[in-house]
Length: 458
Image (cartoon, rainbow, N blue to C red; front, side):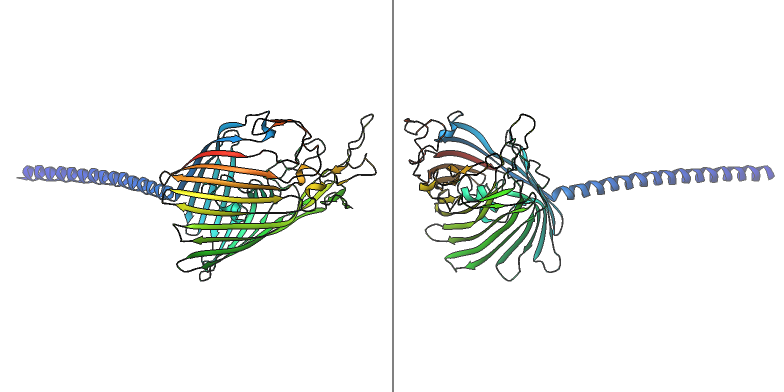
C-alpha cells in the first residue's frame, strides 16, 4: 500500500510538472505572438502616418509646347521659326498642418532648368486674416501673380516683363484679408535686384548670384485691391501697387533721362528705383461672359554703370559709364470674350515708353557729351529710349479641362524717329525686301510674332 501511494505521488508530481511546463510554453508563445502583433501594429501605424503625410502633398503642373514665327530682323543670324517648350512646370504643395503650407515649383524647360517658387506660408490661428510668406515667390502685381497657365495672351506685357524680370523675388510678405470686407492687402520686402543685370567694365554680371543680394538695400512693395459686387451683372476689382527700391552705385556719376543733368555720386550710394501703378478688372456676366482688365504704371527706373578702370602700364584706361535714371510709363488693356463653352477670344493693347523725357524726333540728336572722355563715356539717346506698342490677338480652344490650344498673333510697333542710323545691321522685312543699316526706325521695324501653343495641365 505504501508503494502504491508513492507511485501515485510521483505520477501526480510528474503530471503537475508537465502541466506547468506546458503552461509556461503556452505563455511564452502568447508573449511572442503578442510582440509580433504589436510590431505589426506599430508598422501599420507608421505606414498610416506616412500615408497621411502623402495625402497632404498636392502635385500639379503644366506643359506648354509651341511653334513660333518671328518677323524680327534681329533674328536673321538665328532661326526665325522653331518649335520649343516654353514652360514645363511641376508644383508641389504640402499642407503640413492647418495654416501651414510649403510650395516648391521647378521649371524643366530645356536649357533653362530653374527654381521658380520655393516658399512657406503661415496663417494666423487667431484672427484668420493674416498670412506670412517667406522664400521665393511672385512680386505683388496683378499680371505677375496671374498664372501663366491661365493668362489670355502667351506672355506678359512689355512693361511688366521689364520692371519685374523673372516675376519672382526672394524675400518675405505679409498679407491681410479681413473676413467681412472684400479687401486684400500685401506688404513685401525683397532683395530687390532679382533678375537684373549689373555689369562691370568687362561685361561681367555683378548680380549673377541669384540667392545673394547685390547690395545692402532692400526693396519694398505694397499692393491693395478692393472688390465691388455689381449684382447679377458681375464684379469690379480696383487696386493700386507701389515699388520703392534702390541699387547701390558702382559709378561716380548719375545721368538723368533727359541726357542733360549729371550728378555726382559715391560708390555704394543708393540709386533709386520707384514707381506706382493703378489697376482694374471688370467681370461681366453678359453675352456669354466677358471681362475688361487694365493697369497703368509710371515712375523712375535705373541702370547701374561703373567707374573708370585705372591705367596699368601701357594699357589705356577704360572710361566709366554713368548710372542712368529714366522716367518711364506703360500699361496694358485686355478685352476677353467667351465664345460658347469651348472657345475664347482675347485682345490686349500694351504700351511701354522706357524714357518719357525723349521723343522720337530727339533720338540720336539729344545726348550727353563729357569734357573728359578718359573718365566718363559719352551717352547718346538711342533705340533703348523708344516707346513700343503691341497689339495682341489670341484665340483659345479648350479641348477639355486639361488641354488648351492657343493661336496668338502680336503686332509690335516702335516709336518712329526723326534721325537715321539707329540700326547696326541689315535686315529683311516681312515682305522679303532687304533694308540697309541706317535706314532706320523712321519706318516701323517688323517685329511681329505668331505663336501656336498647346498647353496640358494636370
